[in-house]
Image 1: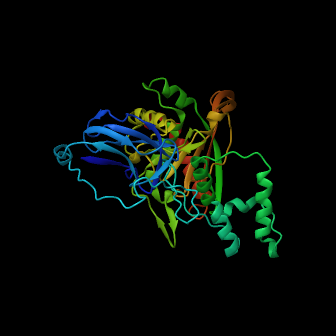
Image 2: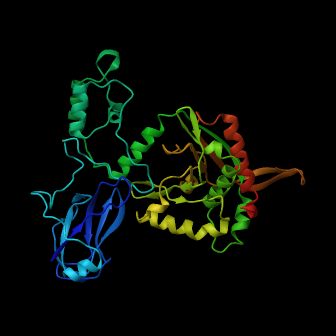
Image 3: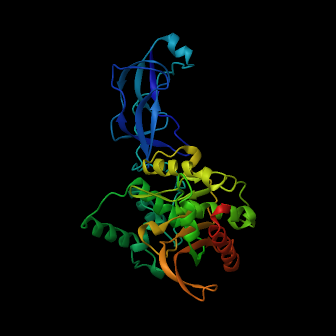
Amino acid sequence: MQIPIIMPQLGESIAEAAVIHFLVAPGDRIEAGQDLIEVETNKASMTVTAPCGGRVEKFSAQLNESYAVGAVLGQIETTAEEAARFGVDLPPPPKTGDTEQRSRSTSTDGAGVQPTVRGLPVPANASGASYISPRLKARMHELGLSAADLAGIAGSGAAGRVTVEDFEKFMAQLDRQKLSRASSMRVAVADAMRRSWTRPIATVGLPVVLDPVLVHRKTCAPKPGPALYALRALALALAENSAVAGRLVGMNIVHPSSIDVGFAVEAEDGVLVPVLRGADKKPLQEMVLRYDELVELARQRKLPADATGGSVATVTNFGTFGLIWATPIPLPEQTLVLGLGAGRKMPHWDEAKGQFVPVTEAYLTLSFDHRVLDGGAAGRLLQRIAQLISRPELL
């Protein structure tokens, strides 16, 4: 009997995945649970496993093509006894055209899908703040564009509205320019930042002396990175007052049930945000191995589902790019993002010595949703984080 290889539900809100590598060949003998196909959705790589043992009869899927969850990717030849042993039932015959139906996000029938990027928020259907006529909306939908894409168009209509003619002229100009395809990750990051910017975002900052951290690192094995010190300090500060990490929903501040903190990792053509769960509960040294593991998995685009989403804040070390100061934007599901700049040797007045002495100093920045926090509350939170960083033995 033949058992189909089905595209599984790879994660919450993931609707499709692209086949990028066949790990076995037709005719190979396989075991139940063995990896058969490597797939990718928005740069997150996963595998499709065998539902039972047997022999690979064929693959109906094609490389670099996307398939919807539930699509048949191939067939396994097995015995009824083997299928029954693993609880695999022979499915009813598929309807005509169902077996190898491909799901493409470029379709024009309104059934386009938006897969999840692990470590990033799920893109939502875009909607602009300005008026868009039904005719123009239909044309944009046909081309797979959102309201945010109209930001670069000068409207000639009443009150500066973008007309269909403005839009078509803009598209014609694009056709005469060099174009490169934006990756799914790039589109997801753009959408997340667009949604974040619908809120009033403000940033405060202050310098922090990193010498205590640098001395403390030398006593640790393995050594925590500066961003992990900042993450742990942020988690402890939020545990003292979780309201500042709450989200404003309607007339209520929703407090976090757990201090789960994400950290930004640069990946190919974007940024992923792995999450350390209960970051206020574990001492710094116990978090190092997990932190390093998640950094590597993020770079490979293979973050596990339990290490993505649901975080209350993010830490980003923009100092790794040589930047001294930046104003990062909180993710749509968060109120806060803590930034750490590059360390520099700076003169610091020593009261005991009565003279300036050199210290390694870096700027901390805290960007926040101004609807939830005011400048005073944000400043006090940042001061507390700086105090904790200056005493790394307590982390």
